[in-house]
Length: 219
Image (cartoon, rainbow, N blue to C red):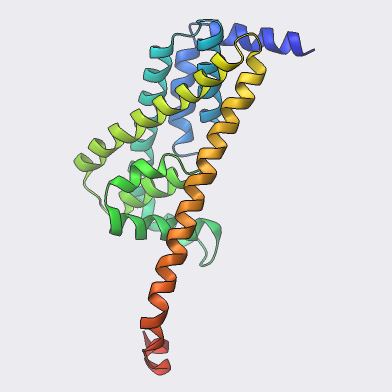
């Protein structure tokens, strides 16, 4: 059973259509986070290392181009319907918190937040839509997105490539290792963001305590 699944995956990865598939998956994932583009890109990297097919450079190019196009679609959605999306997000909901964090991060770090958000599940969509809704410069968005999409593609493919090199004769284990490494990096990024957020809240508490309760309620 495992061998037959491996053969099917190998056939898919050896097909010339894999590059188009990677492009479409990466593009769709930018505004529909449920699409597992990163896992497929990692898998392509594993097979590029273990069997030489697909071509490593073309995988990076297809993934980066798809991510770039998808981010711009998400940005355009924010430009056109971002206000309505924000209005429909219920206060306290996961979606609303994601938008609020994206707006806060954008105010603090500008376009660099787009690069960081590429490595946060769901974060890339919230950030790109928010940047569109807030009217962030399209030219600056494009410049930062070249870096974001390119670095994400190289990172994802190389993570898979490391897994493929480690288990050259067992691509399935290579995929497991590659996905595990990616999840570890994501957990690290989330952990750092959580600690920084807690630190900012601690710093804000003394200043907030100095404000009279009546003024806090009216603010």
